[in-house]
Length: 365
Image (cartoon, rainbow, N blue to C red):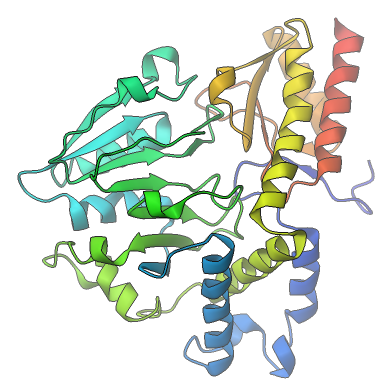
């Protein structure tokens, strides 16, 4: 593949592929946004022009994700990692516990931060199974007195994803959806808070989306630093301090792209089709490729697998890189291979990987 005239087959886990149409539009508008004589990166975040961009992004997100009116939509900074701290700081009240369902590294990180502010407990975990699966509903028991329950909806490192969310019986449910938000329709009303870094399905890194029930936010601790209060950002329409203006602009354009594609139902169907191509190559390989995740817990966003032996795996990754495939190395903590097939990864890119996998197997089996 000539890198000079063709885009890479981008399977990066994040920051990840962005829609080509969005990148080309941003390129056209980069220097002179809407005849202003400035880039949007040069504008005041208090200007009417940026305010329109900002509010339109919120409106599109509400519409596409079917967010009820009694929820706030916030654009914050610091990634999901800052949310690991802000959530217990705001909501883990004295005398209460927070239930964590452990499905990988990111839930471990969230749990670790919560320990600094109160008493989190692990109520279910698939760690003993090397995080190959999502815990079943029978394993999950939430105390009705808990401050909240927390889960990670998709696990980028291990390639697992929740396909049915637990019933928490009235205990507030919080979900880190960084790696599968906007990949399919969900019932937002089942959650009291959803948070997500933008750099998988929503835009470039730098923006963190928080979707939270207003009455849940009203329960937050008020004796914490101003900028770490959700109420501070809700009351100022996420403009308390200078926001990541270019990232919000790009997020809005990605949402517009999703809208033009037909919305989340169409996007979900495409994501299923893309993932199936690669999973079929794994499942039909007679053990040449083996998937990490249990079939019932497989992610449509991150496909994790191993090649027959370690030396062949190194060769597979080396030859894939030479052929223009980017980001196929598994996470450094687990190794192996990983194909991240987020919304903006084209079907043709997944077909190319499937074809490469089949050809490599034929050559080396």
